[in-house]
Amino acid sequence: MGVEIFPGFAASKVLYDSENSVIGVQTADMGLDKNGEKKPNFEPGIDLIAPYTIFAEGARGHLGKSLIDKYSLDHNSQPQHYALGFKELWQLPKEHPHYKQGSVIHGVGWPLSETGTTGGSFLYHLPNNQVAVGLIVDLNYRNPNLNPFEEFQRFKHHRAIAKYLSDGERLCFGARAIAKGGLRSLPKQQFPGGLLIGCDAGTLNMGKIKGSHTAMKSGMLAAEAVFKSLVAPQPEREADYQIEFEASWLYQELTSTQNFGANLHRFGEPVGGLLNVLEQNWWPKLFKKSVPWRVMDRTEDHMCLDGIDQSKPIDYPKPDGKLSFDKPSSLFLSGTQHDENQPCHLHLRDPALVIETHLPQYNEPSQRYCPAGVYEILNCDGQPQLQINPTNCLHCKTCDIKDPSANIDWTAPEGGGGPSYRGM
Ligand SMILES: Cc1cc2nc3c(=O)[nH]c(=O)nc-3n(C[C@H](O)[C@H](O)[C@H](O)COP(=O)(O)OP(=O)(O)OC[C@H]3O[C@@H](n4cnc5c(N)ncnc54)[C@H](O)[C@@H]3O)c2cc1C
Ligand code: SF4
Image 1 (spheres, rainbow, N blue to C red):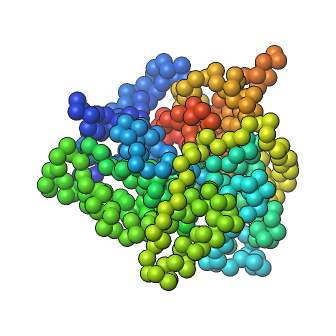
Image 2: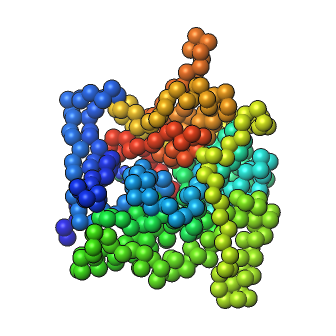
């Protein structure tokens, strides 16, 4: 059919023509060692050229980030907002008294409410006595002592959740950022020679914590727009996605939840939650349309941290090995793997900031927000020093989002490295 698929090849660079239109991508070089020197198996990246390139890297894609920047695609929107989502798959024994296939539980509140952090949780009863349990931690949290991984481990001890998981076995663990700003945070999705779709742009409906159907729909709309542009070529090779989008159910759906995240951010869970009920349940029933007002949150997530001196310490309990676990055993279940001898895919714009600024101000928060223990502050002869363990990386993108100085750039590592979420 003329379709070629390149599994295991990361797109590492956007290619432009002399008029600054996208003409394709370059895959990453393979076979470089950790110092950037060529190994015997070295193969340079290849250029993939196309009339239109559609970018679909998921939340906080690194090429998407560079495109948004280059074309100022977000100049008309509120900043994108993110959460870090955790998910575990559990196998329950047969005849479990509380298992009910198809049952769905969504929650808010504890343990995040103890630090004034917003977010939510889910527990889905899947077929074959399996359940998926998860916690979503909004990344605009303020307390630098917060450790999202530990919050999730603590969450499973709530009696309303523990009763399902007790006697079960944890099968898989994963963590990934969620782009949750909704319609108001959507950047312009079209630019010369390409389109940005799915969570790379931010099409998730946060009111439902669902982004698969919306990502798929944005892909279908992109295909329609590109097809039309191929049949009747557009000026500057810009496929008109916006027209397709605004005429679709996706636009309607995202409009109906456009204030959802901002209500919670601006007014907190009790008031913001009430507003969301009003906006999504009562108002549409009464007036047969979405609310006419807009609520915005213009503060970027990485700018929200309070100083360590003004923040309450948080004492996380030790994992019990039954419901709660440590990071190494969780990483093992994520199946994450990278070749050790390759260039580090996590780039610090200014390495000195970590020890000189972030350590005294925030006790270097990457030690806690990274769910994989990639960032560690070591004591080397009495001097603090940052160690990065990139092979542990889960590709969740939290460091790229939450670093207080936006100092970290996540890039795609070589080949097919990364987590392997079986059954998730
Ligand atoms: C914990 C959690 C629970 C969720 N639960 C639900 C749910 O129940 N229902 C629901 O509908 N949605 C859910 N979502 C959201 C849903 O997962 C996303 O909205 C959806 O996957 C977005 O699809 P996408 O194709 O845009 O991006 P992704 O699914 O993220 O796919 C992007 C792909 O691109 C690859 N990629 C990235 N960069 C590169 C590169 N440079 N080169 C090559 N490949 C690259 C990635 O490895 C990935 O495979 C959940 C999200 C999380 C984190
Ligand atoms: S290094 Fe960054 S992207 Fe990788 S797991 Fe840690 S926070 Fe996530």
